[in-house]
Length: 274
Image (tube, rainbow, N blue to C red):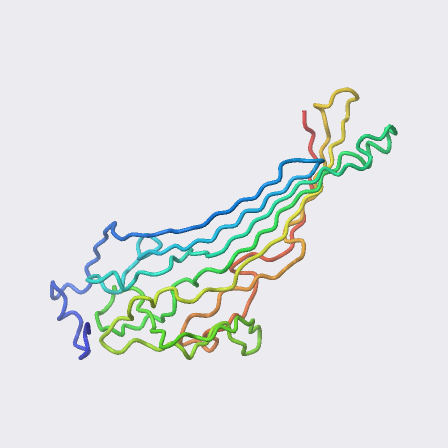
């Protein structure tokens, strides 16, 4: 249904004329979450254990945060779509290896320097989320005046998704030509919110730890050295694409490491445990 096809002054169409925008807050709406969760564990055997956890999920709602302004207060259903935090795939693995070499050596020097080392780590990979605010640029296509929140652009056809990093080039993450502003006097239909997903994220972290017993015969007193590396591969994680239709980089991913931190980090510690 057209909201204001003739472009009439929106104040003349409001229920209480002459008051412009009247803010009303309501705790209304709804959400749905569906998921499949799988978990595989190997208990500690011969000094080694690992775990693998995978989650497939889909989260849908009308709005994902308090204070969201819906475009059409008379039909919030058009805002129903993937949540801002919808993450379809998440894979996490973890492992711990008690390195057996020299741990039981009869040579005290060899045992104290080469024994009691432990190697552990995690690997995490997940798919991307919808970029914030969706594909909109604040234009009041429906002609209802201020206070109507984001009015989304219409997906005219299924876009091509090359999922390429532009950097300083022109490669597209998604085909921008598949989007157009809603016809004047109308809101974008249901399905226009959060229909594009950004790049995913992955990280590799590990730790190397050694316990050194400082008092012979007292295993409860130990000096513990630990070295940790976060994203030790220094793998760059791409940022979300530009979803502003009037931008010169609309549909492109032009940067890294902002949406998800990507820098390699090293951390060392030495502590006395008793």
